Amino acid sequence: MPHKKQIGFLNGWVLVVFLLAGSPVRSQYTLDDFKKGELIYQNSLSSKEDIKGWVMEGPGVTEFKDGWMNMYSPGEKFHHVLWCPKDFPGSFMAQWELQNLKTDAGLCIIFFAAKGNKGESIFDPSFPKRDGTFSQYTKSDYFNNYHISYYANGRDNREREVAHLRKNKGFETVQVGEPGIPIRSTAIHKMTLIKDDAHIVMFVDDRKIIDWTDDGKKQPVWQDGKMGFRQMQWTHFRYRNFKVWELQH
Image (cartoon, rainbow, N blue to C red):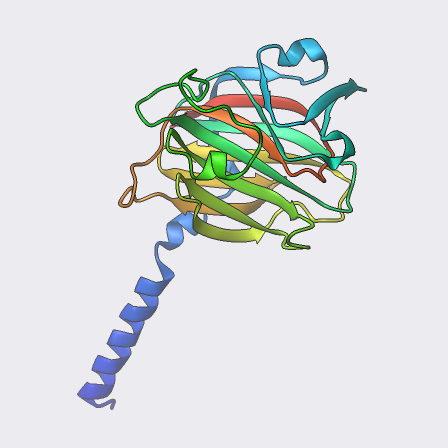
């Protein structure tokens, strides 16, 4: 029969393991656990007219062919961000398809819940002009957001591949996730980004790469705001079928 001290030690060890594991329920979520509500935005991204009102920051260009929007920086000049003009709610499901046309190097990011510190639009004319420089988005004194790097193969950090979720301002890495889009893949992939209030989840196709809940302790949970597609200067992807739904609870 085990000694009382041994039993106490074992019980303590079980408690430590449980605490270190965190909530196993969150980690068990699959794409099927989230239900689409009302469709609140859809854009095929198939023509110049489709992105009328969208805002490009930095020397990126868009070209349209075969029902796709190509995005890149001519001559690999610099990084760039393309913003959708719509404000999305604090809970949503977004999906889009994309394909890598240049596997040598690149990095893709999605910004979301981007909004001014005092509730202003990120395009408020009083804010400094942005040109694609990363710190203008991650360490801004004017607006906040979350961002996920879901394709990571920058020439400054070769073959990182693993997805990162960061909370801004501050460039705080809140989760190092699973590998994102494979760095050599030329397949068409479907991205799904889910924000259920404080719970943030992302999938590449049906494979989960991010699953994190913001406790709101250091900074508040960011809610509604804009979404933007960022690429580093070496990147050439094409995009289509951007859709956003409310979440059905």
